[in-house]
Amino acid sequence: MPEVRFRPKYISFDCYGTLIHFQMREAVEPFLIDRLSPAELDRFFALFRMYRFDEILQYAPYDEVLEASYRRTCGKFGLEAETAAIKAITSAVLGWGPHADVPAPLAKMAEHFPLVILSNADDRHLAASVPKLGGRFHAVLSAEQAGAYKPRAQAFEYMFDTLDASPADFLHISAHQRYDIMPAFDLGIHDKVFLNRGYDPEIPHYEYLSARTLDDVNAALGI
Image (cartoon, rainbow, N blue to C red; front, side):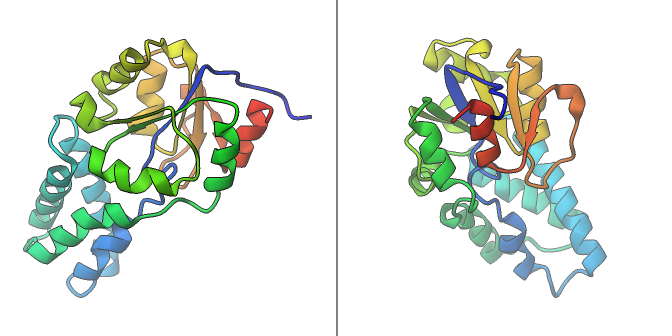
């Protein structure tokens, strides 16, 4: 039998990218494909990703974060940030669905552990996305509620305070190193899973279990 690695009080998740298939490039690229070369497109999306991270270091509603980071990126390329593109970007999040490996393993996990979402999104995004995931959640916590986005400590501390829990009570699962795994390590969440969806590289210093699917996580939970 696989070794049981974790027996947490709560299992907390990032939502977008980890559970929901994050498809930002697919939403944005149609507005750029005729204006940038393939190499420029790759650079555009790398910079767009960086600006999204930069924008969430102070709180604003998520649609404003997306609009500001898109406008900043377009400005660097001398492009007009079209209203139609901004509308498509901000509405796309509501339509995304789960990764294929999520619903069945997540439902199984929910039979054994209280599940929590700690998401860099607003309540309205999560109201659209969480019902698609297939698992029952004990708590769904947003940046809007916390008044802060991950990686800020305020976001994680909002989760601890809301659940009257300590970092040692959690197994935290995310596909994102900078937003989740690194600050979780710094805040004393010992049990972590980096669910490698290809967004970020492995960084073993942060002492996590690397997994490819939620079935791998369930095996580490002994279920």
